[in-house]
Image: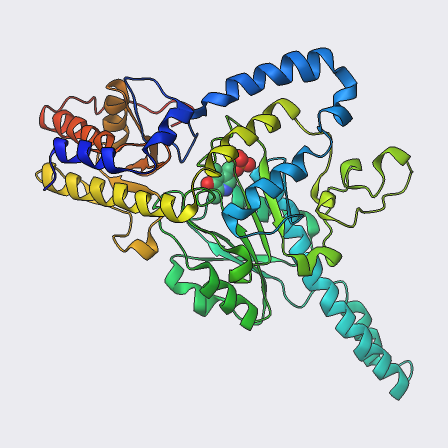
Length: 444
Ligand SMILES: *Cc1c(COP(=O)(O)O)cnc(C)c1O
């Protein structure tokens, strides 16, 4: 078993160690919540000042052109793309993950319904050629309004907003779409059949930290003629992602988690190039127009990924996303992944060795290929223990029911931080230094 000195030695050898200097972290905190809100890049303060003083203060409206504000969602998309295996011109940073998921899911359902109605038009015209005015033609015409593929597959344990968005969209479409929720990833093969229009999944589960095999699930979906929408909220910047290589169709994700973009920073949306021509969504705002400043009364969709934009962008927040992305350009996801697994392995083994007498249950898979960059631990008084930990400067978070989440961001976390976090957990447990009556606040 490693000692604290061993951990310090690991830090001295760590090639990512210098990147910690790119973040502003309080000295008395071990930050294990980068999976919820990443730490602040040092440059974010300078950049915010620049946007406020120069670009907004001095440049005023001219900055839409002169400071590159108008193109910022695309520039950031291009900068983020290599982290998730996407190419230039394929993604934008805009809106929230929830809103982007709405757009991606709507686009995928639309593509499915379109390809079906094209097939039907062909059948119809064949039927008309054979015998005009038959019952078959009438049936084919009415079937057009009800898509044949009406099932969206997801996980019951998916992040709630993903399920809520799917529920909201299908309710408002009112075309007979249903949500088919599986209770574990093992049930996906049986759930994906020819009725499925879209498989909508989160790559790394927010509660358990379990990682799905994107290429395998995508292949499964495609074999049944279904499209995939991937939520990368907990994988962008935390595990290597290969959207192109996996054959994925659509993807969305956060920038305020492992990408360190700042609280509520805009999310991203990616459309596979092969779908770009048929991509469309209901939020057809002027920023997605082919020529926004022509001020035409009819919507004409932009031919590029710009059409994923809706309205005017939150520039101050958007600008800071770049500070987080810049840091990734000084390393690569292979190195990040290697350290992430080393940190989570260390945390798991120290917890099991040093807190063995306490009822802590590991929820996150031990297998590397099934693990994201977080470790979730079940404990009967999880909320109370997490509050006590936060009180001592070890910051993780709590998720229903009885789960403590610890996120490991290799860019700024040290091996010794892991050691100190486990030692703090051990002390609190040994001394029963937590209040089982503690009740959750609005944000847990
Ligand atoms: C964090 C997270 C979100 C958050 O969505 P917002 O619209 O940014 O609030 C969505 N989906 C998943 C899977 C998440 O982990």
